[in-house]
Image 1 (cartoon, helix red, strand yellow):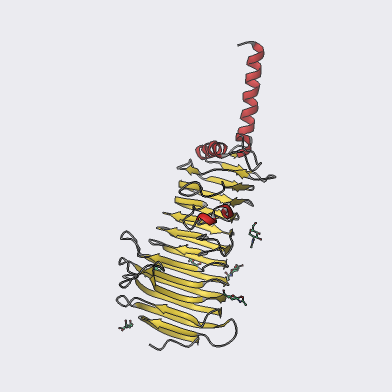
Image 2 (image 1 turned 180 degrees about the vertical axis):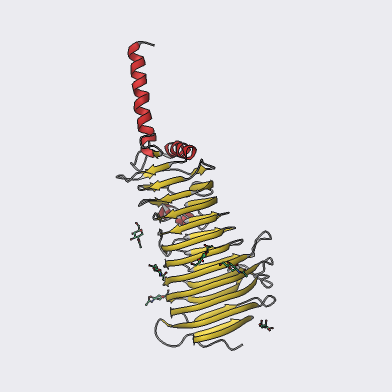
Amino acid sequence: MSIVRKIFFLTMMLVLNTQVNCDGNTYSVTDYGAVSDGETDNTQSFMDTWKAACKAGGTMVIPAAKGNFFVNRIELDGPCSGQVTFQLDGVIVAPSGNPYRGSWFTFYSIDGLTVQGSGMFDGNGPSAWAQCPKCSPSIGLYAITNSHIQDITSLNSKGVHFVMVGGDGVTFEHLNITAPSDSPNTDGISMAKSSNIQVVDSYIGTGDDCVAIGQGSTDINISGVNCGPGHGISIGSIGKVEADKDVNGIHVQNCTLTSTQNGVRIKSWAPSYPVTVSNVTYEDITINNASNPIVIDQTYCFVNKQCPGDSQVQISDVKYIGVTGTSASQVAVNLQCSNSRTCQDIHLENIDLTLTEGGQASSNCANANVTYSGTQNPPPCNQ
Ligand SMILES: *[C@@H]1O[C@H](CO)[C@@H](O)[C@H](O)[C@H]1NC(C)=O
Ligand SMILES: *[C@@H]1O[C@H](CO)[C@@H](O)[C@H](O)[C@H]1NC(C)=O
Ligand SMILES: *[C@@H]1O[C@H](CO)[C@@H](O)[C@H](O)[C@H]1NC(C)=O
Ligand SMILES: *[C@@H]1O[C@H](CO)[C@@H](O)[C@H](O)[C@H]1NC(C)=O
Ligand SMILES: *[C@@H]1O[C@H](CO)[C@@H](O)[C@H](O)[C@H]1NC(C)=O
Ligand SMILES: *[C@@H]1O[C@H](CO)[C@@H](O)[C@H](O)[C@H]1NC(C)=O
């Protein structure tokens, strides 16, 4: 190699090195070739940036930029060396249609992940919804522990916005999760087999559940969530498959639901496998014009199929404390429990729900063992 070429190469390497790792532990996708023109496929650049940040225990940066970073299906895997941050300040856009199975953006097997920033995941849902209901989630969180997802926006997922399985010690905070009310199955945060989860101070308005708590979830706190449009805050559906695990320790506090299909709902399949849902508290809940403000539905099944047999899901120790507001339908408190597994220890305290149009709402209960204290509007069920 000539001296001139040697010097050229050495200089290039120096330039590349300083570009790629300019700020200690910070790795920007643009230094790995990403372009925010909305067309360039940045999947490999994102992959390379992640590998560097994960290996070093550093920060992967998607900078604020004119235009969007187009990224195809991608899986960011751990374990990483120490804490790793996904700093999202720009906009990442998904392919159009519904071209892949599984989540668009998967985070897998990471301890100590922070996803944060003023940026947005744009799932490009409008291009897919005609082909749904079973469309891909936007963000998949699988086996993520001791982690924070905060400040970012998730817009128009094709399917579920955030799906989490096997999470432990995960906080969702200050999120904006948005999709139109008629978008199919666009749950905000849908979790299963997860523990020690906080969903705090967030806005969630979608075409399906704002938060869905699935089988095997324990010690879940939801507070300061503004939900609507959507199907409300739901536990279930539980009991569909034999492997389903119990749900225990759910606390929903200081939440507001506006023009949602349901307010606070527990649903189980009929028929179903014998799991339990217990130790659930709803506290300080404001409901504006939900169709079913308080609902337990143990007869949940596909509308076009027969639902023979009772649900074998045992629901017990559920407290509703301070649920106030308005109902879009006549029945504001609707507790439809299983004939063979009657709901036990349901307690309603200081309930004040009137009809949106004005007038007295009513209660409707079946197979529910309910106790009451404080204000009861609508009046208790006559069983
Ligand atoms: C959420 O994000 C959408 C899309 O950027 C925006 O239009 C909306 O105003 C935001 N909502 C809140 C409550 O921040
Ligand atoms: C839920 O919140 C309560 C009170 O805010 C707190 O004591 C409890 O530790 C939280 N639970 C979890 C699983 O973080
Ligand atoms: C209730 O939630 C709102 C956000 O919706 C938050 O601003 C407020 O601080 C919360 N209040 C309490 C007492 O936690
Ligand atoms: C009820 O759930 C809370 C968490 O919300 C938990 O700390 C407590 O141990 C649970 N109690 C029972 C009896 O399972
Ligand atoms: C209440 O909800 C119903 C049905 O979801 C809707 O048609 C109606 O416009 C809403 N009313 C108000 C006052 O928001
Ligand atoms: C309702 O609960 C009380 C107290 O736990 C119990 O004695 C009674 O048998 C229960 N009734 C039904 C129908 O389950």
